[in-house]
Image (tube, rainbow, N blue to C red; front, side, top):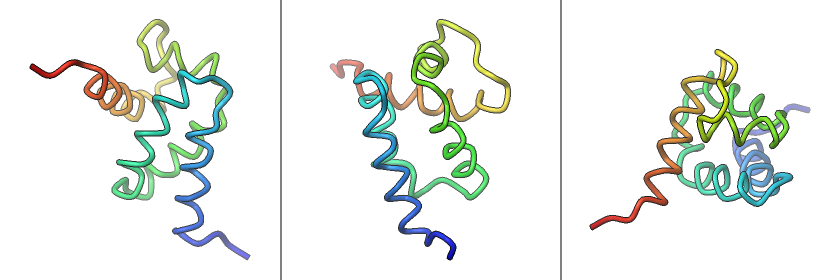
Length: 91
């Protein structure tokens, strides 16, 4: 039996909020809540693969401390921009 679109989004949101580190919970959780439903199918597939990555690799990629693998570059840029916008004080 194949996973429904609704079940997939729910699973991906849960995995985004329940990472190995609090930092990645706070980056991927809000992103998944606000953006997953609007992502196209190829980007959702990429995000699902990204969730398989280790947080000790993900955080340096998202924060720009280390270069990320080419296949994740556009998605991680989007996630990083989202996270920075949420944590930048607005005047």
